[in-house]
Length: 581
Image (cartoon, rainbow, N blue to C red):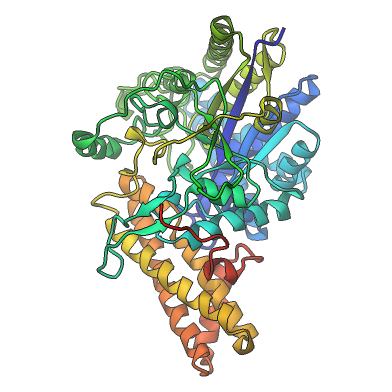
């Protein structure tokens, strides 16, 4: 008898890197994630289906990621990348054979076979990763959620037009790639803000005044998005445990500064992550949006690099790589071990741990669901959301763990796998609650994205948001003065603003993961935006563009060639403007 439901939810996202570098930062990021995560997810899902299972995995694919995976330049880059990785493994194998290092030789063959399999798989699917995800959704094995168009951090963007554009572009891109309307959204960084009179944390043009702002849930409701996911501390208070803090030493330092002024909200005992609630911060009576809540107990089992499964000493260590090829031949050994102390990786030992960890996780899910049913008599739901790239890229054995858990729960007597939309239709929640502003970072607030290292980025973003809104409003008010060239300039401006607004840049700066690259990218998009602004203003004033300016526009459009169906109007007028709270 089904006593409750379980949803494995993965969030797939990478910032726009095409035509913006290759190694160590750039398209190699995208190729790594495609080979080590996205292709493997497709593979294990198809294996489960071939074994007679119905896996019911939920995955969020950010629009900016979809644009890149569908781009022909990525497909060409990916083939080159896979062949390079194969050659690197062959070179390593020759050296290990020469020196009779048998275990390392086996590891080199492991990498060679891994990338050959990826290359064959990529060619066999017509080099179309997005279509394969679409096919699995159409066949009922997968549910695909959308995300903010370029992963903009919703609570800190300064204009409702920006949130409107991020959301509308997300829906439009989803329909183009998947042939249907999305029902759910993974809010970037799971960050939410209700409606209130908002004061920008960084002065805009030297001025810091409050203005009425709509709640994030309102933009979702207006665009047909029915549910999103929040952290458990946003639902019921209590202490929040960040999902990234174990991975980045810089975040621990930032948290140490923020923690001094942080007081967790008192825990509300009457709310539970096992249930689904409705959220509405609109006084106009818009359709509420459903919220699902991350389960904190199972989350730690996977997220924690120190206490979770990925920290098992038998698994491949992410950080120690052999150059020049970059393959990994060493085991975690210990979460406290220095790189020099890492032991050689043994694949058979790691696979044995996958089965044990998978069984442990599955049993934990069953125990939690059964305990909730015994206590309440209700069929609760357990949501386990993670970054998809954790499975395969960060944790090499992660996809096999995922397959093991889905396989176990497909045959469970008491727990049934579910899609979130399916669960929403089944439950039909009626209780409307209020939730506070926050994210899934440590302490549930914004310090990862807004701190002393990133404050300057928001000044740039806020300046460009205001200018884009001004130019888009002119476009709306002057239909008789429009021309095709001005339209191209304004649409490219919109793309540069959206790329500038990606939350990735602040995250990479705060974590020191790729700080120089993030700062460079942000400044480049800012400078491109400013030059395009001058060109737009020339056109508006009746002046012709010079040949060099036209070439600049062409180069920007070729370099940042995402979202062909972006609309200027989104940035010029809010469909349903906010009134004072």
